[in-house]
Image 1 (tube, rainbow, N blue to C red):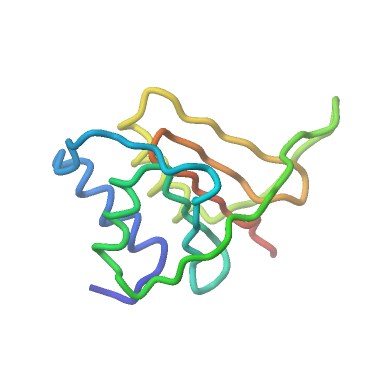
Image 2: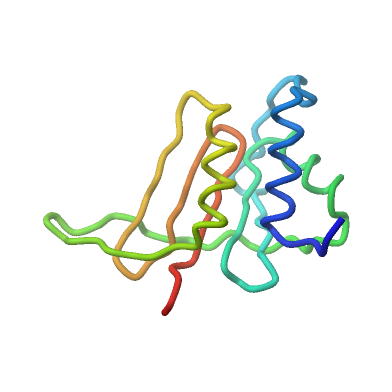
Length: 130
């Protein structure tokens, strides 16, 4: 398997979810224990919200380092116009994973990362800079 990039982790997780290999009970990780996994290019972070998702990540890439979760305020000002560019490669893979969830939340703010939240994970993308 290629280097332990977030993109490769998500691609592998997508395969696992598609094959329904993670049918165990869903237990949420307490908020004060959440840790994220940062991509080597600092373009993305994945934050497991459930033990099954965290264990799947650790099982795929044991050498990934846990990082503290950034505290980001995504509240935009009323009437604020938001325009940002993000990696289409990351977006395609995460959008593919989100089809397994009933509820998916996308949050963005000018000059802020994009945050995608599902039941099992939060994915944060840095804006692309041209």
